[in-house]
Length: 480
Image (tube, rainbow, N blue to C red; front, side, top):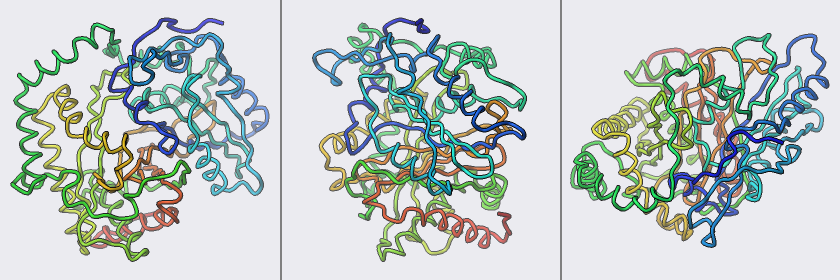
């Protein structure tokens, strides 16, 4: 067996932190469910067998799908090397599952919930894919997961886009995990940059690097001053920060390892129109939908606080020509204004907090943003490692928006109907809401701790209620 790019490399510290933060209660993998409709006159069994064989090809795999962790005596707290797995068992990584009849979406998402709650085996490459059959109306699904140390939302979207085609007649001949497929995809980006591979020299230079960046980084100093002023109520305008004034709710408990995953799609044009009615972005509209839904959820528990919930909103700082980087994100804080009854006023408050956060980021380079994020998020990392996040919660929820494909895509002729992202709840933030724009839809995936967030499926109905409420307040009529 040959393995693509069969060299040893060092994992960047920013990626390795996801390994350090992982516990049985907080698996640090991302992924999701893709839903497809098979083409007419295609035998389902033959199609499934063909795709399983394709996915189980072991020749020419690209990294990170071909790599396994190699630790020093310091374990995950020391330098982590990635080496080719010469004996990769593709039948372990690529699995088939048939839903029990009647094979409804409920059973599909219940299966995904259980799969998403199990840790990836660190003695193997840190990814799995399950091909799910048994759905009605000639639909099939895939559940995919990969460790966050290797991919963020943007890089996982590149992987998915490389796997699919806008040509319904295209028949793939190589695994989507292969070097061949990925290099063909990268040729669509002629100026694509290759992610730098860190070395031991880089590790020795980190202190000097940070000192140099700190000394020359007026943007970081200014941002931290604004951050401190906002946190301690000494200014900062509409800028919202973690911790300060955060109300305690059931979302802020320490979590168990069991997950509940639910999902739904909305018309992208409908959500965009609602945001535009408030002179806002799609991201503003999504945050307002989530705010209204969480408000209704807490009201149903008689738990709505008189202070606003806050969301950690990851923001990609990846350059458009950066295809290879595993993680390239910052984090801003959104005031969800859940204490405000009027939906229009709630939306304006959310917009003000996001505009303040984006204005702050615009004054820094991507490198400076990474330093700023590392400094401001360090206390949260410490509470995660000590399992004290329930006592000192930073946020109420994570809400992430990932740009997806803008056209109809197919996998070996099967039409892509939905891309439902599954992400990471953590101690102190027992729920994660992630959305992906997908052709004419925006697909929501909600991942929560089963114990801390009971009846999370209600949020699907509450999201629709919140959207209708915002439309009515803006004087527009949405189309479901």
